[in-house]
Image (cartoon, rainbow, N blue to C red):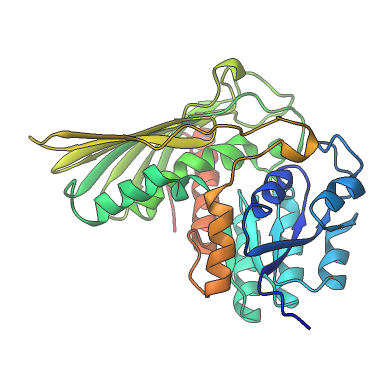
Length: 349
């Protein structure tokens, strides 16, 4: 009998999980075996038909899928409040795990997930895609090589459009606000470049409403253990017609760099050493990202982070973004909310 050397993956959650299915289908080393969602609403076709298009079985219950299918890994794309139970179930079965951001709605859930994966000898990979895009990978290389000198200041912006409410996004302990659910992208970008945060100070509020008493906007500073500082803005108040325009500017003792993009993607890098020439590169804006050519091609762009997950698991390599990155990000997001409410700086332990 031929041995399938591809990574056998199950997907739980067919919201953003649609994107995972499309990307994994473009990775020769990946085999999506099964998908699960009790009530998928974004498919445009019956879930059985959608899964069959990818050669996968359909389950209503993700835990049942984990128990019944012969999997190597599972991609968890459900509400954050469900992540802990699903990660623990996967870990007990010896499955490596990819977890969509945010890792959880509480620090306690993050800690339990980390402990479960440690105890069962599996690896948790965080789905932080933006640090894995080519401009960010190159900028990180420049920082590590000392091309910009000691990095000491970063500013960034990542503001999405309004999120519906009330919904899981706004429920503390689940999505724990749009800051935790979406602004986490720019926070991860900053931590990728500058390391761990030890202090947060924020201002913000709920300016559009959404039917929930949870902050939808924040402007905040991060202090890093290295002594560097960052000034970030995020939230869910942008005008959708303009799209999400993420931006990061990084300042070092010997130079400066900027990455910019559209939607959820950085694609342009500009940098220079002090007194040197400006280096620019456009890696190409995303071509076809959403809602094209029917239900099976809604997300035709291959996500580098999802390809990396497959190849890293197969090679036994460390994750591009690990469980500690995910847990630290949740701590920061919750500290932003606490600081807004207390009007005081918050220390990250």
